[in-house]
Amino acid sequence: MSPVAHLQADHHRIALPVTLSDSTHGDMTHFELITVRIRDRDGAEGVGYTYTVGCNGGAIHATITRDLAPRIKGERADLIEALWQKMWWATHYGGRGGAASMAIAAIDIALWDLKARRFGAPLWTLLGGNDARVPCYAGGIDLHFPLERLLQQTDQNLARGFRAIKMKVGRPRLSEDIARVAAMREHLGADFPLLVDANMRWTPDEAIRAARALQASNVYWLEEPTIPDDVDGHARVVREGGLPVAAGENLHTLYEFKQMIAAGAVTFPEPDVTVCGGVTGFMKVAKLAEAFNLPVTSHGAHDITVHCLAAAPNRSYLEAHGFGLDRYIADPLRIEDGVAIAPDRPGHGIEFDWRGLERCRA
Image (cartoon, rainbow, N blue to C red; front, side, top):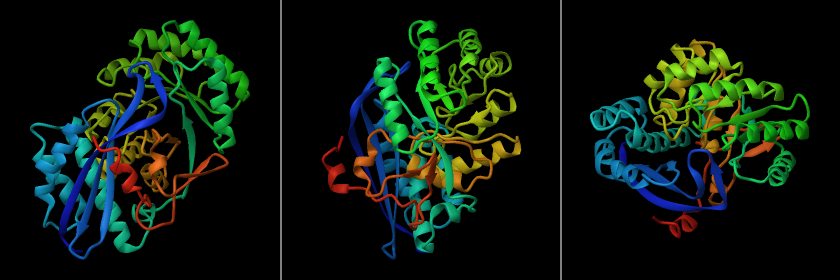
């Protein structure tokens, strides 16, 4: 494999098609996208990215350009684990997570894309290959939507082929959440998979009360009931709340997942490939979950994550929401009757509209 000859990182600010809201981030009008293009000496190219909601994109971009790019240029592009370790230890003292893990993720994704393209293989088969058809759900960011609009969004997602739906909870009064979830349950029917996401809104005691109240609506899982730093609190919610718990989108390292899983604090580990160190980090978490006989799910970046879950025998649902990124991708994720189809194009198959993104430079 040819050495890395060039790395280009760009920072973009992408407007959302509509204002979105959850219980922690409030109203969201934009997200920050950091793209990476890596080219080897033979001219082959791989693409990666990460993103943030609100801020911190500049720190990630600077970490890539100032700290990581010089360390991988000239190195063999196919030795991805070795490069991952080199980047991890280069940023270890000032990182061990946060912007460093997200910067590593963008480069790692580009390296895996490059390697798969060089082999002429879809990424999911290069990662081992299990099943290209991955169950997926529509992840609504809709806490402040009026009920009528929430149900309208749900019907639109059903028409798009989704057969599982997630909605936000965490409104000022628990009674509001209970009523909205009950209305969604009635709208969808008794057995339709309905997931709810609190975005870290509650204390463990509040989350336990909410989980017990939500049992009547046959909720498939309760996501991020409390802050990710409170492992013991999560474990209490799992033990006492009576609902399966999904968590992990705010965990940045394998070791954070180890603590959460070993403590019995999560039912569905939920890594984000753009947060936890890229494809390399995601697959480490998936294998860790498999060792504990747990199903692994995902957060964000569905066009990449579909490959990771298609290679994981313990895969659960893929979350599908792209913060409007589909407008800048040539062939967005294909969804058919409740499953996402991992593409058979070489690499991860994402082809960005670079001219369109150029107009969104931060």
